[in-house]
Image (cartoon, rainbow, N blue to C red):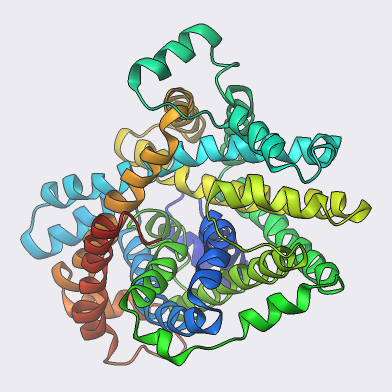
Length: 473
């Protein structure tokens, strides 16, 4: 038997699933990190704050968070051999002799992961619908008429300002008529199928297919768009640098927020994936690879979206769903016959990014049921997804508010709690042993004080500035 498989067995009891290889783990983690923040927010932030003026602080924060928070969450999960509830409980037990308080605290990141997964389920419904429309030609037939494209998106993502309006719409139309109910069900079914096959047989295999294809599709789009008239204006903008702009404190806050949320440090997904990791795998190199490839995904999305917008002479003036589901389809449709294929490639790539993220988000609550209630994997997967489906259908008119609540408050608080558990509650030597397990070269003495006095305060700042500015990532 290979050393890799032996390592996996050491890290995971016989009853516990795990990743079969180091690269399977890394690709799954890349999949969890590569999501909508890379595609519908990162290019907008680069456009708003001026190319390299934004990228330089962003690269700095990716380095800082990758070398602290990402490593910490992987290490905490592997050391604890469980998700946040079990790992937080074990850390508290080492410090105080009792697990209960740590387990209660660990429930918050589980709730955050479930909340984000539910919001993502609604978004995935939009993505599945647009992918279908791109293949069928419905999206291309809308041309560059932003009113028509906006109306198509509005039918998928209805907005309701009051509870009464939203409930009335649900009663009158039924779940298949409200916005996007049918496509949310499709998204949930796909997630169930992948996750029911297990960590190695489902999540790892799916990510090994989807993540390379995602990069390939974006690279093909980037090469094609580079040949179009006007694309060079986009490249000039990307490589522009305004030194005076670096004095803007909001630039630094948003660059930090983009890196923080893109790397998925929230005390949940990275912890549970770390718990499936073999003891012979080097944490530092794994974290470095995740940070590098997540950043590359954001950059290739940027090299598609900003030059594409430049070819139409338009400005990248919106982020979020408005960019991905309204502005970009109009730009792709204006590229002529091959624009239809660009649209297909784009939404398939986005579908892969969203799917690999959502299975990571649902994995934390699924593992919670397995660990705490000793349920088998299939019933755990079904229970969690049924809850997710029901709530996702109900929150459609308030998806934006739901996602804001979870991402602004619960996720950074989860990252803060995980950081406190690892760098403050866990004994220093225990923490260092955990991060150095399987390492060819030991992490330097800088790691623990850096995490304790820099990373943990940064998590608190993510929570503070998120609340102050209405979200920073």
